[in-house]
Length: 111
Image 1 (cartoon, rainbow, N blue to C red):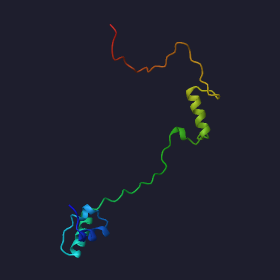
Image 2 (cartoon, rainbow, N blue to C red):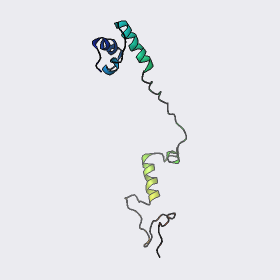
Image 3 (cartoon, rainbow, N blue to C red):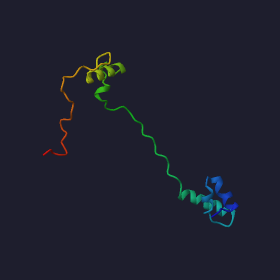
Image 4 (cartoon, rainbow, N blue to C red):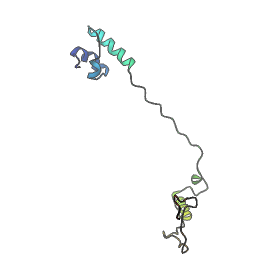
């Protein structure tokens, strides 16, 4: 349904779209304007949520203040944890050692 010029004149200054303006009812410009105000109060979009201020809180062990909370300290802990030397090489593994999940279960059995 197309809005009339009177409906557009009453609704567009209040921020209504042409489809919304087509739904306005009234005989005079004052009645159309009052209907546009009523439309806005009934179908107004919800207010945006208020942002919550995020403040400190408990920090993990990797963000400790023991002097190792720097990027280089984190890189050193990563190398230590994964067995990487300063040149980026991993330590050699024992032959025959396979890194498997000890909790994995076979989904089938061999007969």
